[in-house]
Image (cartoon, rainbow, N blue to C red; front, side, top):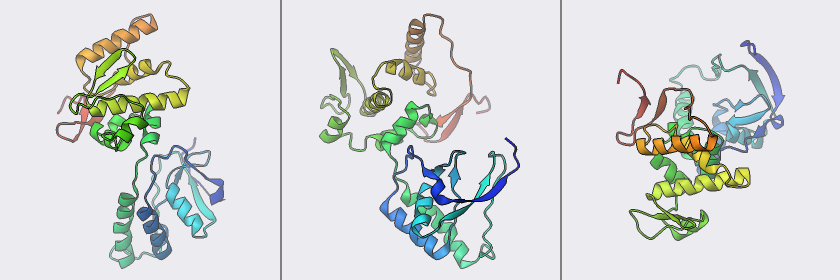
Length: 263
């Protein structure tokens, strides 16, 4: 694809929402965005794929349509050319409307964020490496916010013991002692996998494959996972191409790059 941009106008109705959108948004965020657009115009651009599916800015599109907009200026690029939206009605950054928009834009994004745990797990099953974007504790809080309640346990069809420190997850005659967060994530993964594939066939292999790409895995578990993959594949286990791992360090809560020799 040429990196020369193509600019044309198109109907908003020709663009559709992303069924995999993991942001449920909030009522407050929706109201704030509607008010901001009505009083200060459209601030953020919308991002769509080539087939017309909006993957960033779905709420903006919905809000401007409700406000009566029907047409949009479309700029087609290959992602290598930065796009800067210049508002001619904003003379400089000290303008009151400009200052309000600068704060308002970030505040709306903050209050409107409402993660959909199911959609996040579906994205993980599809291959999105969530461990590079979230800390484990953050994902657990999003995926099963009510995990410590009886209703939450029933929802994901688990059989956890009442022990707070070491819940027991049962698979037939087998019982696994896991910490609460790990038990919840495992069950959510299996539920999402079954919904996508119709059965749990291949789920363990997929889980083992994911374990081999998690930063700083337990050496013993990694060795067991490699042996299992080798046994299932009927040949010698070969890891995927090495690459720097970027993720969250649970101890210092900062981003790290595994394999950086200059650390």
